[in-house]
Image (tube, rainbow, N blue to C red; front, side):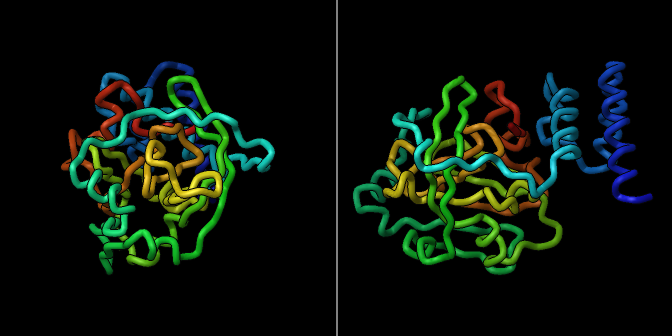
Length: 252
């Protein structure tokens, strides 16, 4: 069966299931083609599965979020969340993050601990993208940083890897599937509007995921882990977000 006809078959099956409210059929199709999100077992699990599967089937991995002109950058940049109270974080902040290290480990051939200076020495990119918050506000900003794909290539991701997990200096955490982790607009940002990344926006380094809602762009990064399962991390839902009523997958 060709890739096109297979995709058409799956998409048609999912659409029919939704129209008839037979979500069990959609779930079986999603399971067969590895399209089940880690928060599928919750109260809204069937809907989460249908949304995730449909977006993955209908959107190309190469589709890009819109990028704007510099003249369209917002005047105000709202902040969600608080600066971590973590003692280690504040000690690093006081010294300009000179001793900060980003650990990259898990299912990789070459685990690394990268300094901010090392990150800045890697090939970088700028993107002017829209950040939309689940609470209703949004802004457009210019971000500077390193494509996550460059880091993944550097450490040598093993074939069995399925997720990339991001740990900040607070108690939250989040993850991406490998498709979104490799996406060209997913990157580690250390600059905002041609300045150092401000502390309230996640200094020294934050994740930027242009194709998903803002809460997926984890701030205050400390560690990145590549894994084949999320079951043993937190409550196994792929993120802390489902615990407070938000979806693991937040595609827009």
